[in-house]
Length: 235
Image (cartoon, rainbow, N blue to C red; front, side, top):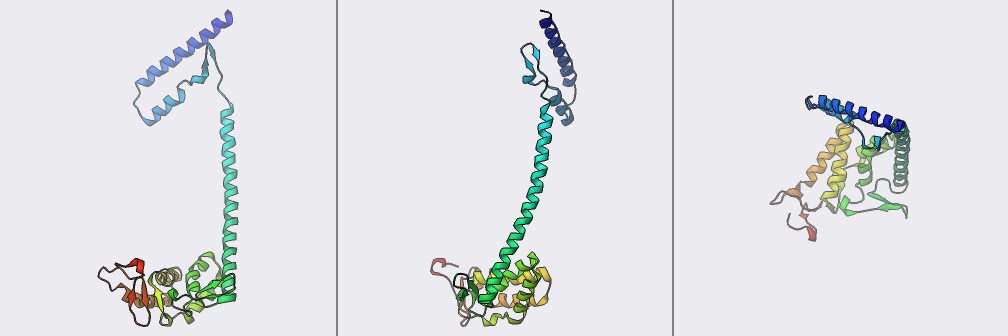
């Protein structure tokens, strides 16, 4: 009976202390700091069970510390994994560039299975090096200096929009040639890139001569007549 009386006395004392604290807090302004104080001292339901006061779980701090250690370790693992992935992407780029260089240098693109070149009129014929112009800025960004210099020199010496033949795609010419050359100029500030980009833009101007100003899909480089695909009329 004495143990029960002591426990009841402890509970009553704790309740009295909490009541006094709550009365004091009720007169405090509702600032964020005070709200945080209330949250910190409010009784947790699990701390009171029957007539006994349950001790706070002291392992909570240990769990938080352990979790923080895991987060730090995970961050270090992610740094290692990120670097590994970067290197792997660069290796893949080098592999792709080597295949193009060995089997279809200067052509539109590579047929990797047959190890031969692929010519497409949408790029303006065989003498328009779509892959070289399209890949050069990526080579530069990746820090592949030797490969970039190969691309740069070829573009400077050989890229000529007047060599384009057939009916090319306005879209493909924009994103690969015009976009590629402008990106290279933005990265290097070499003037010949902007000069060649201007020649591409000027060559595409006939496609923009429409009532709406929206360019047509295709442009015949010989007749300078623009047209749409049958499924893209209305421009």
